[in-house]
Length: 284
Image 1 (cartoon, helix red, strand yellow):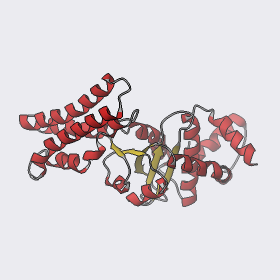
Image 2 (cartoon, one colour):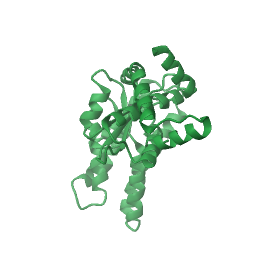
Image 3 (tube, one colour):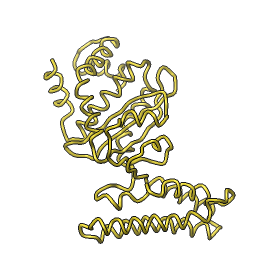
Image 4 (cartoon, rainbow, N blue to C red):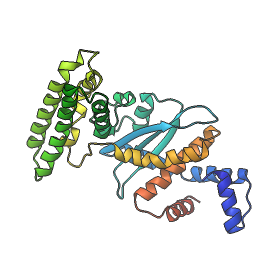
């Protein structure tokens, strides 16, 4: 809700009249009270074996910027963490994750995530959409359509093989991984040197990220897509559409801190009101 909507709600439902400035100050105070809890979320994020990353635009005082969103799998230890920055540079992601993060990063193909040097799973949902667009654009070119189908078949084969394995051993996983990487390379190499070929861009992507396409084969339970990051970011996107952004750096910090805390409580299956009340009384 916008601050004006909160003011209207308090007045209408609770007969409580507060100025916009008073409401803003209360929100800032909640952020201050939750500083320790927020720091704890960031540390939990950095120690997680799997982290999903994504980003979206966010204006501050009319100036363009970005919200960086990082999340871990749902459950009692789930984390949702948001920060707003002017930059979309990969340095931001590297700073948030910190030097201690050694888990698997799941992301789309945006180059800002290339700075992470640890295990990395790229999103197949994004790749499959691009393959579909390639087929739609070149539907009359049968070799192009066939190439896209063969790349898609690698993903389907990987998922099918994992479904058939019963607690597969590491050797089985590594053998499947090596086979898929080699076959993806074989599909990409013929077109990667020809900039005029319709498959050139996606071929270059397959080669650039060949070791990041099938990490889900090696790691049990690792998703092959980044859908969780997009779901986690959706409420922030809705906020942006309603409010248009924030007016100050302090406002951005408060909005992202509260979004992190409340989204984490929901992801953990907690009652956000009770969790927030407990946090405030514990730090009072």
